[in-house]
Image 1 (cartoon, helix red, strand yellow):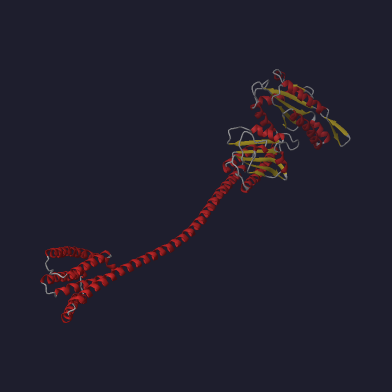
Image 2 (cartoon, helix red, strand yellow):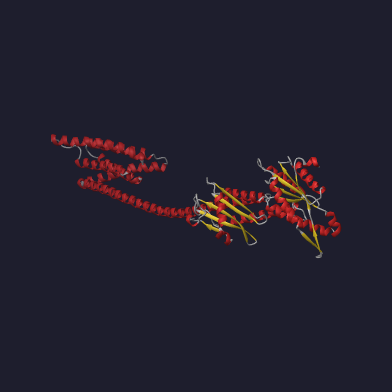
Length: 557
């Protein structure tokens, strides 16, 4: 179609030029009062043809090739009619226009098949046949005017049809456009539905993503807690010192959960010792205030209930023990064994809603492990105690009392003195021979009870050194103070009455040697040796005496 429009554009240029020439000719003949050699009606029809061709070109022939063909047949019929005119000028112009139009029509159509070539030949011959028929009829009937007006009405009818067709095509375009708009509207509605569906799907996926992230956070938290529990279990199974144990627990809880502060209080019933631990990221040391709060009963309401307590929206005014720190979440878990509360675990965080039921379960599991660890520590302590004690008297055995002496000496500060007394029951072999070994054991236990009680009262230690020999260690006691203590012990033993078979009262006495470091002795070996010498000096000089070691005693011996 673009090729047709290009040729039509060239044809219109020639027709426009020809119209201008013809109009000039008409005006010239009119003003010169000459007779027109070209019929005026023919000029009008030619102008109409040119105008119609212009209109058809503007509307691109309605994009229909058949309109182009029909229009050209009409044009060539008009040209062929005037070829048979008697006037030479009219014949020449008509002949030129006919063949020019016919040749260009063939060039534009580009026939290839024989049928197309025959069709184009008849399309060119048909106007000549029609025009010849009209001329023949006109020569007999002399109806030239009728023919002229007939052609004019045909042309007008043709132009009217073109206009109607153009309007129809525009309407068709509008309908197609409305159809496209409706189609696009339906597609848009469909897309909107899809958009809503995908939006809902996106919301579902986003919710699922958030749930997965939440589950992932929960999984990481549980994994961290499980790792902490496994690490705690691994470490506390090998930790047998309670103070070290609660320090490890506090460190692990801060590392695993990220709390600001973890505090632990443990009362060891086996040793009657109290252990306190405060681990915090806050730059403030409140260990002493924690001890004071526990001792003053501030935590009693949690201690007495024996049940875990959690507050995720803390009002610090409700808790007198919260000072010098910001706390938003709080957990307090009692340490319970056999329904008896023996301690507290306290965790704090500065943000609110930090703890939930999972956190509480974590702390409960930690408490279970602490119970196991403390029980292990107590068992180990008891085993150590059994291993360090004499089976008959309950006093420290020889090896352990010697280690106590060494440790006590190491902890002596400058100008401090450690006194040591070595005691031996007088005539013990005679007691065994007279009353038997079982009664001899009763004598040893009765004497050891007095020695143990007085040693503990004075902050000292007592041990069984041999068969009927005993040691009393008095750290930070100079000789003159130790002499008073041991003398009182001696008097109490001398006053002891032991009943034999509810009929005989047996009394005992002891020989005692008392030395001190560094006043007299200079080391552990020397201290034991000099106390032993002082005790044997008592044995050799009448027994039942307390001998105080001094520099000249060795010379005497």
